[in-house]
Image (cartoon, rainbow over all chains, first blue to last red; front, side, top):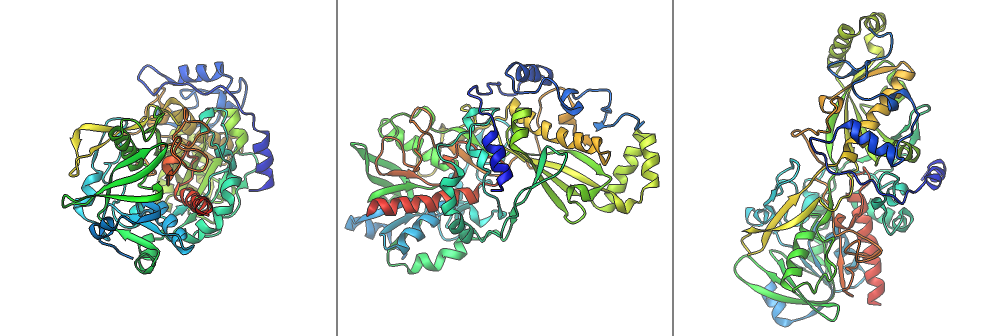
Length: 72
Length: 478
């Protein structure tokens, strides 16, 4: 194993709290999942735009393209 | 040597190790122990070649998420599923053995260092090519990872002569485990059946069940029922935490600078999250695969993108088509280990030998969806920030509902879990030595002991475990 990854691995925090999501069901949406992850502290509150922006952000076209500002 | 089961059983010999199953784990164990002079009985339920009679015992029901028919996802004859595997190999990452932040149940009782001494032997058995170290990509939360691809070693061809000639290795085909006898925490005998109504009892000092990631659970569930729960005294997890690597197409991408991702020199590039990304995005491991399109398909994708994004299209028209490429984004990811994904006995449907067939209940979870989506978003983040590409999400990932594809490749046929390794019998079926809790001389070989799976194909790891188990048994036999 490369030393850099060994160090990364050693530094990785170990959470005693398991992710306890239910199986995928029609009632469970991405928004509710993200809320649950945030509540468990498993997602950063702030981060890159890709992390913070939900799937249906303005830059996502109807057919799934993730465009950058100015592309259109 | 090949033996006649009826003649062998009538003499009531005591093998040092009885191995049930001649797939990757069973053949590794049998040949390594026999080479050290151990008297081994190897029982294969099928024949030397594929037979419908044997394969039919693998039929079963799947009632969870869509899955490959159970008798199409594995092979039941000498060599097992190595007769059709693809040969992709990669060891698990060191952090695959740890409790990941997204779900602590990914932890193994052992670490990668415990398997490291078995690596070279396993690599020789499977003819694994040297695997380059993972490569960080500056600015990207994903790293580039590598596999040994091919030659899909057929263990049947590799070991058929050795099995036939070894004076220490007693090999019985068409020999199907049907029960285990136990007394005072030891297995005293195994009941085996042939296809003509013959039922025999074989004896050994140690027994190893190595029948694959579905059948190990099914056989133990059945043997435990026949013994009124005396084989597995704490069976709460038996058959549970079953896993396969889900496979899916995640979308497409147009890459303006293929060299940034290594796509200038390779037709396919594999990416995976770093440990830091596992923590910050709350995900499990994932193998993100970028498969380069033909130049024609890449340009069709560029035209489609230019129609939707005219200003970007202007830039694309000024760029040489040779300097960009389209890719299909696919993934094989680490599923969340969950007790509700499981193998059960189907009491409404029995096989020709009278054993209930397998019923598989496999369900992907919200964390599975989150894992794969975050990986593709991390790639998108990188491509947009450096302005070197655009991603198109597949519909199932772009929607705000947590759905998965219901057709296509679906999974890797990597059957794992069901008899998971744990520190205590409350949390698993085998201990760190692959020994069944509560039984002094019963072991499990194969990927059914995996508590979690990483994203790498499992065969190399399960052969490492078999090499390690052979060493353990040899030491115990003294």
